[in-house]
Length: 387
Image 1 (cartoon, helix red, strand yellow):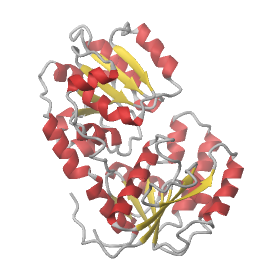
Image 2 (cartoon, rainbow, N blue to C red; image 1 turned 180 degrees about the vertical axis):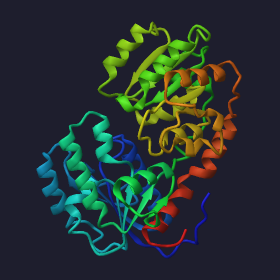
Image 3 (cartoon, rainbow, N blue to C red; image 1 turned 60 degrees about the horizontal axis):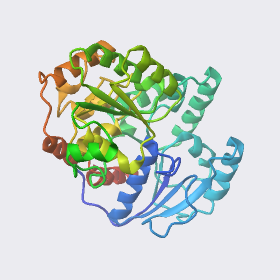
Image 4 (cartoon, rainbow, N blue to C red; image 1 turned 90 degrees about the vertical axis):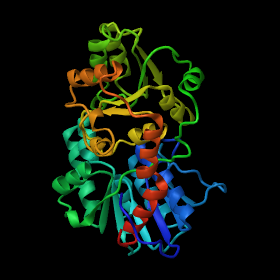
């Protein structure tokens, strides 16, 4: 765990993000929402600018400036973003943190001349291409990313793996890249229910081993590989039960795969899981499984699950192994393929690979990924202070 200098005097910090959590329940939105709360808790004056933000909320400890409506056309959003940014509350912040290239792009000439940090949550163009966008669209997105990154002073990445992508694909020198993992709200995500209680709250079986995977239902998340792995172990472990939470374009395809593999009695599609239900779902499971196939920059769901006391099995993709390697390296599969996932699942469910205790999972997450530890590190990078 990194150490850092004592906090400097309160500063004015500006965050420029994407959408509003939990209205837009994405990983970036959650990260920015929680980071902003914890920066404000430190004592800084903080403002969050983004798309689709509430116009006003007296209950929040930071300022809000809504830049545009997500329902507008891209051209309208660009125009509104620049116009509304001029009416922000912190006209002369001490530092600015950008989080998404698309909505940073129209602001680059309007930003005050202060230290500018970009938090690289992933290669936008490459992720889009892997999810089916056209080549021209991907090239435009890559061009926008490069134009934004060219004007930034320093960068934060949530894993060494994404630092490598930022360095190799965008030619950012390593001396300007800072690796700081994502944080988890250990108050929201905590083991405060028994497994039995959690299952009863969600209407899940109380007498079967439950695997849980919260994923967007798109190709690179690997749900198809997990279903194939399940089909390989169900004869040996006939009571295994998989809960899939999330929505996406592949829902009907995956439902058909379940039928084709005769897994109807072994798989439940929960659909969209409300934010207050997520900690309950982690606690209901014996094991969280993240079968990502590509571009998993950090793996926030891993630390959320661990904070709730539930161990995690992951594929060796992106930043996920960096989370589990110091704690449970035996819970990283050998590859992303169904055979490798099945091999690990069978060994775990038959007791050949022991799982860490609920207390051990919780302690590891709290020690290494609590926002109270992570937020001061992000703040230090934004202000150009030594970690």
